[in-house]
Amino acid sequence: MVQYHIQSDSDIPASKQLFDQIQFAIASRQYPPGHRLPSTRQLAMITGLHRNTISKVYRQLEETGLVESQAGSGIYVKAQGHEGGTQRRSPILEEYPEAYKIVQRSLDELLGQGCSLSQARELFLSEIDWRLRCSARVLVTVPARDMGAGELMVREIEQALNIPVQLVPLEELSQILEQTHSGTVVTSRYFIGEAEEIAAPRSVRVIPVDIYDYSKELGQIQQLSQDRCLGIVSLSAGILSIAEILIHSLRGDDLLVMTAQVNDAYKLNALVRSAQTIISDKASYDRVKAAILTARDDLIRHPQLICSENYIGDKSINLLKRELGLG
Image (tube, rainbow, N blue to C red; front, side, top):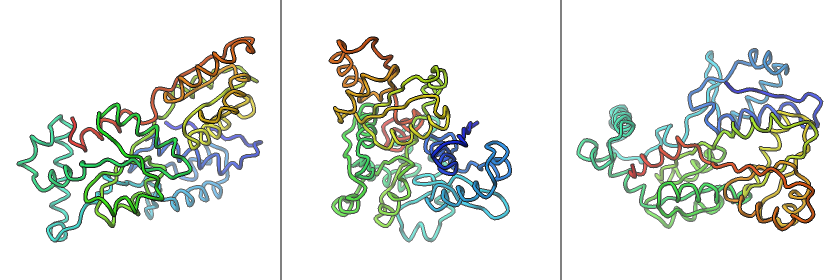
């Protein structure tokens, strides 16, 4: 169950704290597609916020395309990408839409049981052919402002799947897709709405991946002593931003939090000299360790360095393997 932490005396508006925590819960699959969010009354009791504030947050989430309101039922996490059944259009699909949905569900069940795409080919030839064509090229896309997040995704996908992956700024995705006849676009749930808007008209499949929920790291942060200086280092500016919000919502002003992108040498060196605990993503770990060694003569005590092993959740990696016919 998602735990909400709202700092009422913070400079960060309570509505933004709540919005970011729900958005993170959706992106990290703590709230999976189809999950019904707490009612405004329930969330008001949990957080102490006014129901009007919660309603405003839910409207903002709906505007971003992360959730949808169902009259008389509630607010639900919106299914996206392959979950929403976005598919190529053809006369057969137009004529038999429900029958094709049955084929899709059956194929997913086979994949879940360990059946390979080649084994299922004769049973579902048209669907398998389409998926194999889409698998010819894998594109990871994120906004240009946070290419670090894309680099983390590319590293983990290439390592786990042993395939080449191309990183494309979201702003250039339309142009790239005009030049290719097949491919699969992969992105974080944070950016799925924008990617779908570009890819769907071109009959290109988009697969959203869930980011790691960082429950282990948040648990370690919860145990840190008051007034400790905590450093967060990542390739991704987006991860640093959401980390600051989550940590502040969890601990308020109990901790001094410093952040640095690993390529910013000035900020990284300042962080290494000030923080007693540093949490780093795997891609940045060696650089952080080297910075600590370089500064060792200036340090009274070396900071505790914690490496966060994942950016993408394990279930998403396994799903990609099945969707691309690699396992």
